[in-house]
Image (cartoon, rainbow, N blue to C red; front, side):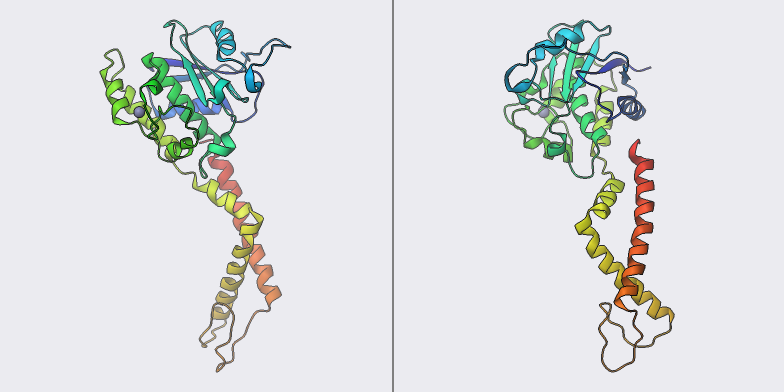
Amino acid sequence: MAGYRINLYWMDGIAKSPNLATLCSILNKKQKTFDFVFHPNRLLKFPKGTPYGKKHSYEHKQYYDLLKGEAGGYKIGITQIPLEDNCFNHQDVSDKNNLMGLVTLKDMKTFNVSGRNEYQYLSYLIVCVTVCMVMREDLELGHEKNNFCLFDPCLGKESLKDSIQSPFICGDCIDKINSKSDINGDFLRDTLSLLKYVEKDNKSDIIFKTLTMPFMSIPYVFILDNVVSLIIRLVRNSTSTIDVYGESNGSTQVEYLSGFEGWLIGLAVLFVLLIVCIRFYKYHKGK
Ligand SMILES: [Zn+2]
C-alpha cells in the first residue's frame, strides 16, 4: 500500500489537458510510495470579483485558503495562470495537518523540453512539491545557487529546461532526504523512478512533430523521391552506376523516373509514414 496519498485539484478553471486522472494513473504505475489521486468534482474556484495580486496572479495565500477546506493531508492545486512571484511551483509546509502545494502550467510551452510531453513536464513540478510536502521542508531554501537539481530555486527560470532534460537530485538534497528518519524506505528510490519517467524521451513525439512541420517535410519528400526512384531503377535491373541524386554518369543508358512521378511516390510514402506515426503517437500519448 502506498505510504502517502497526494490529492490533486484543478484551481480556477477546468483544463482539458493534461488529463489529471491519466497523470495519476501514470505516476502510480511507476512507484508504490505515493498514491496520486485526482478529484475531478472538486474544482476550486475563487468567488467572482476576487482581486488579482501583482502581475495578474493570485497570492499563494489565496490558493492555500481554498485548499485548506479540502480533506486529506497532502494537497496540490494546479493552475494555468502565473503564480505569485512568477514561480513554477510553491509549497506551504508550515502546518503539518495541512501540507499544501501549488503548480502552474503557465510557461510550459517555453520551458518544456522537445520530446517530453505535458504529462512529463507537470510530473516534474509535482514531484518537487510532493517531496517538499512529505519532508515538511522547503528544500529549495537550502540551494545557494542553481545546479539543475529538482530543488533549484524558482528564480532561475532558465535552468528549468536543463533540469527537465536530465532530472536529478543533488548530493546535498539526497543527504537531507536520507537524514529524515520518518521517511518510508523506498521514498528516495520511488522519487527517482518518477524522475526517470520525466527523463524518458518520447520518440513518437519527436517523429510526429518533425514530420508534421511543413518546412521539415520538404527535405523528406526530396529524399524519399530519390530513394524510391533508386529502388525502382534497381528493380528494373539497371546495371549502370546510378547516382542517387538522379544525374547520369554519362556513359551508360539509365532509365529515370520523371521528377513528377518521383514526387508522387515520395508523397504517397510520406503520407503512409504520417498515418503510422499519428497512430503510434496516439497510442503512446497516454502512457
Ligand atoms: Zn539539490
